[in-house]
Each structure stands twice: as structure tokens, then as C-alpha cells.
Length: 384
Image 1 (cartoon, rainbow, N blue to C red):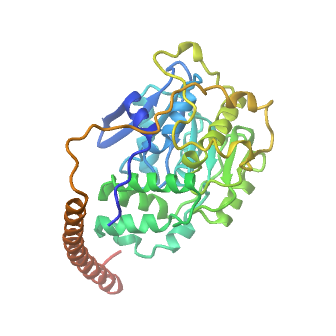
Image 2: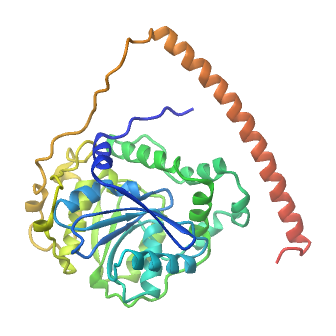
Image 3: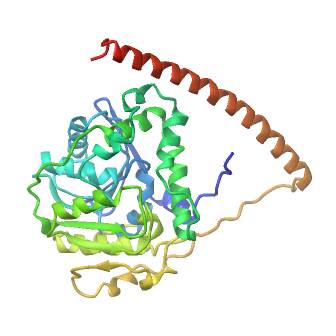
């Protein structure tokens, strides 16, 4: 059983400062953060299959202190791409947001392009990170997609987590993986099934009317779950897009390389005409990335932006006076003897592992039986 890791100090600070919003629009439940001056056109962050609204907390804190408005969302429970388009449009209407700039990573980037294709007047620019144009490869790699809705939660989580490269990682990338894994653990079975179906329902992005000059493609050069072939297709589709290349960063550069990602996002917003309004900030303290940022990498991390607008180094020091919230101290009563504590922990771990194993075996047997029944009925022509 994997140990529960402590939350990053800067994330604890973020949660204390930025409220989480939850609204119902029709039958859809939305969970999101909205922070920064409301007079500024928002940058909407859409996560990938393993992400939540929380994974962009470093972008929310850093960009909002510079006068930008950032909205980070959870993917709602939608079961196809058309349903996503309608649900996202209603979400924007509910927030009274007419025009948006979207930062989408992985599946989030694909959904951003789908929305831009079908609602061109609402999308003013795109930032696509480790994203793709079509889902055929993902569908081919998941032949059991027709029975996703029958699969137990632990199987769906395991399938999603196998797409995340396991160590060894350098510390900041390892921390980013741990944080995302902790977020996956918070998702319900329906949330997981919905995301998997969005990722494997066969579809491709058609032509979008947005000029390439309003698109930035931000990729990491070390590795990510999206095949290189699909990333190259994206670059070929938008040859005039600005290229922001991070030498390292893994699947989640917004967590492992927040300084570089925030810099590129700020350059993109400036270039597409979004004017920051630091004069409208109220009660927002300056932020420099806090605990867990990639400051140790500095400017030597290998990042590259192919068409810089001016010298970005002047912006890097713009938010450097926030105190460090990297650790917290908790008062405790009389300490428990170490031997007693370890013995109790070991006993609980063994009991939990036995129960978990029996439960997993029972669920797996039920799932296999359902899958076999599905295949038999399919071959018999009973399922369309």
C-alpha cells in the first residue's frame, strides 16, 4: 500500500487563499477555480485525463499576482465530444464569459481544439501542451473501451496510472507525478470512465478558423504519455504556431517546470493582446512559485521559445517576495513509542492488504464475466 504523501507547502497556501467553486448547470456538475481581475479576459486551463482543476495551482497563483485572470476546471462527466462542446459552452455562459484563451494539456488540448473548431467565435487563442489531433491510437490501444462503464474503479485508475511513466525521476518531476497521482485518487468511478471515453472515442480535429499566429505549442522534449508521432502531427497542422520547447519536464511541466510554463503563458497572453491589470489586484499577495518550484533549474533548464517578444528575463523576478510556505509545524501531544506505532501500523497494513486483495479479486471476476458475456452476445449479433 502506497504511503500517503504530505501536501506541498505552496499547495496548502494556495488552498487557503483561492476558493474552490462548485456549480450545477443542467445535469452537469462543475468544479473550478476562478482567480484574478474579472475585467481581464480569462485564461482557461483544461487538464488531461489524469488532471483536476488543482493541478494548475502554480499557474493560478503566479499569473493572478501579475494581473491576469485564470480559470482552472475539472472535466465534467460528459460521454462524447459533442456533449463536451455543449456543456463547456453553457459553463462559459453561466460565468458570463464570452471570449476565452485556452491552455490545454494532453486530452485538455484536444478538447480545446474541438471546442475551437465548433465555436470559433468564442476562442481567441490556444496554448497546446503535449497534445494531439486525433484519438485513433488511443482507441486501438484500448480494445475493452465498450465495457468501460462496467469496469470497477480500481481498474480504471490502474489503466490511467499505467500511462504515467514510473521513476526514477529528478526531484521536481517526481513531485509532479506524486501530486497528479494523489489527484487521480480523488476521482470517482464515473469521472474516470468519462475521461477514458473522451480519450478513446474515435474522433479528430477538423479545420479551425483560428490563425496559427494565435496558437502556441508547448512541448517537453524528454518524454510524455502522448506518442511523438501525434505531437509531430500537431506541429504539422499548425506550422505558423509559436513553439515553446522545454528540454525536460515530463508529463506535467506545469508542476515540474512552473517558472518556464508561466513565462511562456505570459508571453503568449501579451502577444495575443491580453492586457494584465495589476492595478485591480485586491488582497492577492505576490507569488514566486513557493515550495516545489523549479527555481533550481533556472535559465539553464533548456527551455526555448522560437519567437520571443522582448527579453523575458525581466519578468522572471516579478513575483519574488512571497514568503516560503514550504513546511508547516503541527502541535502534538505526548509522543507514541516508536515500536508500538510501527507494530500497529504493520498490523493494519497487513489486514488492509488482505481485504483489498479479496475485494479486487471479486471485482475482477465480475468484470471478466461481464466482458465475456458482452463478447458472446456481440458475436451472436445481439449487440448492434
